[in-house]
Image 1 (spheres, helix red, strand yellow):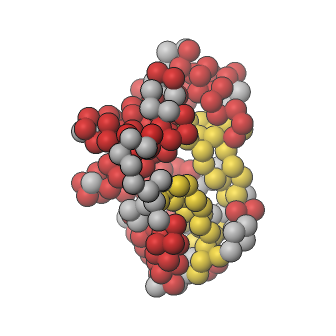
Image 2 (cartoon, rainbow, N blue to C red):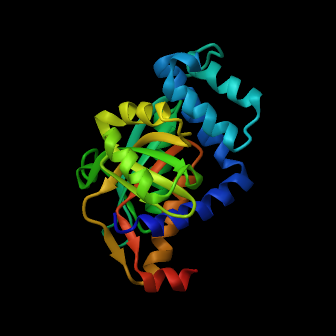
Length: 249
């Protein structure tokens, strides 16, 4: 994927900002609650929940927050049920966005997402208008110290993965969507520690932005969507040219 390394840098920078602002705890809580709702509150019998808890612990999320998120997912705390929904939209220069939301109020979230788009050179789209431009894949992330790029590529391909993207921070492994759990299980069986196990949407035809002003608009929209309280993931098809990336740096 041509833009992986560029997006990787952007996301790592944003991850530090999110950690400072506490946003990362909210995202972890959403994932824990959804995992508990889907597969029960016992992490030993729910691989998705176990991974979500591991991710939360990795960012020092307090134990009581984790336990509360599990209880919210299983319904022990009562209140509205958290639901998963994906919104679609267009950004500057026709760039495409998919936003995965976990919310207990669908009407509120839909209105909020429409407002974010309309106020930032974008427009919300009808279901299916954007999604067809992306391929659904499984994504597994391992820390860089798990091994060198060549060894990770060999191990992952043998386990059934499609490809591996490595840098000095992490290894990102892509799998067929229906093989995510099987590949993750095989990697764990080989003693590897998985930092993240989730689904991702990869653009079929990336849109390269070479105008700094458009790049700033697109990044602002991405950041606002990603920072929204109910957001789990944001996927987009835009990439930044090397010249624009250097100017923004």
